[in-house]
Image 1 (tube, protein in one colour):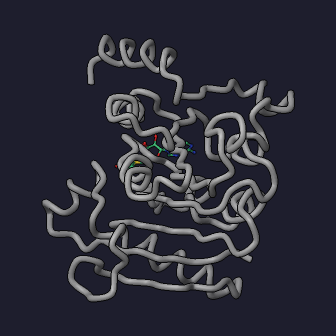
Image 2 (image 1 turned 180 degrees about the vertical axis):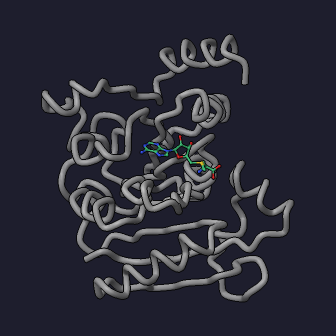
Amino acid sequence: MGSKNKLKRFKENETFANVFQPTRDELVKENYQLKGKWKKEVFKNNNPLVLELGCGKGEYTVGLAKRYPEKNFIGIDIKGARFWRGAKTAIEENIPNAAFIRTQIELIEHVFEENEVDEIWITFPDPQIKYQRTKHRMTNLQFLERYKKVIKPGGLMHLKTDSEFMHGYTLGLLHGLNYEVLYANHNVYKLEGSPEEVTEIQTFYENQYLEKDKAITYIRFKIN
Ligand SMILES: C[S@@+](CC[C@H](N)C(=O)[O-])C[C@H]1O[C@@H](n2cnc3c(N)ncnc32)[C@H](O)[C@@H]1O
């Protein structure tokens, strides 16, 4: 995408009522005004809150919001020009239960109050295979601890990935931590039993892997 187009999207994001772009200081130094208040102030209801982390264009945020009007969905990504797509679709299609936050996932505990979140989807995270990149891997111990701070006890975690490495790494880690794996499938389109939303919603990255006939995997788990 050209830089002109990006700028246009950044500008448009600022006008979208369903886009939130807190600064680092607002989150870390101050008590962010929406922390603990997403349901009441943003969605104006008390429905469950579901996050999509590293949402890219927000296919899961929008796709799940349409399927589950009785839940609230927030896509989070650092790249505003990507989620512009999802935010714009939500506005054009009048989907009131989808929103987007531009921030680093590392700051999630400053964005949400303890127990504020009901479910978390992680969709096609970069596996960060190189040893030096381990700290950026979105299911490492440090990230799981961050999710644990904001998700309700018993809240569901979902990981959908094309990376065999990420799938195996996460399963191994969950096993070692004695966290409950509710469902795991290492080839969701070929093996039976995948939940509907796992096979019926495809993301931008996923489509590229599907073209190359890569297996897509899924894990549903709990982290407490
Ligand atoms: C491989 S892409 C997948 C995007 C989308 N879920 C999909 O399947 O098409 C990973 C996304 O995670 C975002 N991301 C990676 N690390 C992040 C972080 N620490 N905080 C916020 N976003 C991050 C990137 O900007 C990118 O959009």
